[in-house]
Image (cartoon, rainbow, N blue to C red; front, side):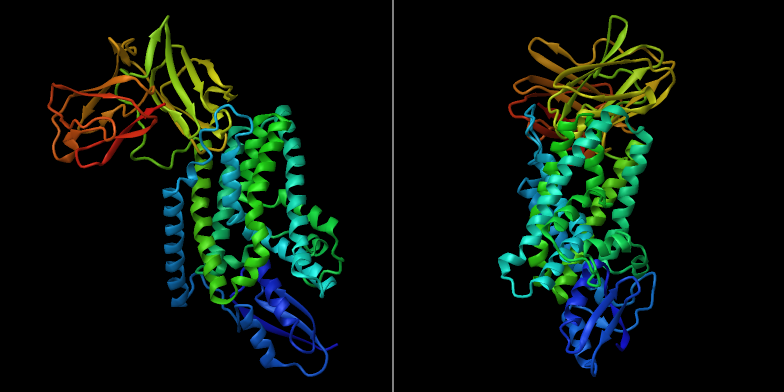
Length: 556
């Protein structure tokens, strides 16, 4: 049977191959089409005269063009950058809309309810329309294509069955494998450094994947995250596969996606392993897979609806989202490795002063109290004295979040927090910084260990009558130090800031929007006072008179 080769521009993944193959097989005389997006070509076997115009139309219908694509570092097509700008705008609008609707907060406040896995479900929803769709979409399309080939006269509902079996197998597989890695987590645990490296590697993989999707870095097409060709053929990813479709194969294929290199999946796997509990591990992975199902179930219909320019724009927008998530993973990985890549405004303890209001001297020990919440730790920065034992009391208010698994490699701490107070004792033996993070690197904090300075005073955060006193120091070099405080709902409180320098400009004044209408000005030698009542839970910024954030008061 005669054959020929055609070169195609614009393909970036296995799904592209399937779309092009489907269109090429519709051309009269084409008996077999083998498309390789990495080599940007298609091998055709045909009988009778070959309709070259039909080949060009088929490729165009799939959303691509005929021609040899020269590999460059950056695309020289202005339209690619225009489309990327539109994709960035769409991604930004979607992000702002989701933030305004409070979607990112749906996973919080799960309390001690063991079924409160909203955060994991939301992460699954996000993954299902980003990294999981990009990585697993080819598998879904492959299963559906094999079924359609075997049953060309099937109805639309029947053609949807492969998607249902694929996702059912995926959820069941994630439950089973989640239980296994949860059990393994009770037998052995990866070191914090390994966790950091794995998380950072997942972020790097996502960064490359996002770079491929935005299509302005052609050289990234040479990097592939797909399964080996032999396994792909057995799973029906490529049209040249000789394996017959079956619902069982589709379900098994869905279960095997547990091992695909998706950054979200790997993060959830680490979280599941860190629980050291097979039931919790199964629930985490099962709920995550359930969250990805809506996006993956929509792949079949979406693949038909987003061909051509709409398809390019869809994948570029997904690429922008994946890149944003990649940087998030990279930062988390670096946090786990003890590297803080993000400085600037953050809750900060005074490294230059040991009079930390969050540290008290009790019975010869430095007592540190911290709350673990759904969205991290508060307060999360402390100054402690070298050589004096520390009693770290962590009040866990939400045990169904990665923040409940806390790591501090420098002092050998790796603990899954239980609801209520958890006590960790350690001895800071040398000056420097002791960092701690959650098991995913998302939330972090630190102890600043100081040397030959005064012992922390027992005063700290105290009470005068029924008023809780929050103390801080203002200097022009360090601003408000410390700048993070926690009070309980209903407390009457007063923020007292000792001004060691006079303030100037807008940063010379301070207020607490939402808690106090007072605006006070820093005068050297004076202690300004802001009184308020914590009527409603939330995070209230400490700002200058013009609203620039410089600290936070958390009402719990």
